[in-house]
Length: 187
Image (cartoon, rainbow, N blue to C red; front, side, top):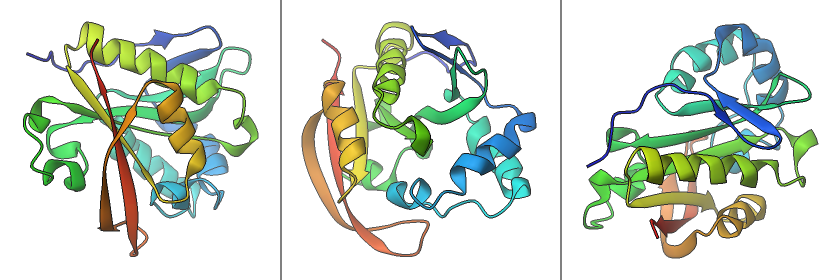
């Protein structure tokens, strides 16, 4: 049985993961307006600080959704989230995988200036530990769209293994893509 999500702060060697704050809309816009970020994950670049503020108030206010802050900088540089139930990808929920409703899905993005430093893998490992040890999940899922090798490398470096592919998956960009799903089971 999984426990209810509750906002907490998670610390790692280089990062602090904590809930997003409305006051961080301008920094979110700075990163999320970059066309190298959102489209790789299937969402459009942000077009204004107001849009980023609205996304913090709606999407990023969901339980177990964290801003990643470098300890040395104290400002968000990305996000990582655990989603379960109806918040999980429709492609997973409609997959027919037995017990999927008790699982959780991991999603993340990182500002481009911080790519290649192992920061996202560090954050993902911390959230995996929370999901298994504190929230009681037995399986976690994660997906990446075709061509997003950075996301795939993060998944595999954190122990996720390929499970299945879904073709013609609609995105928030209005296109259809191929998405590869990976799974990690509690050891």
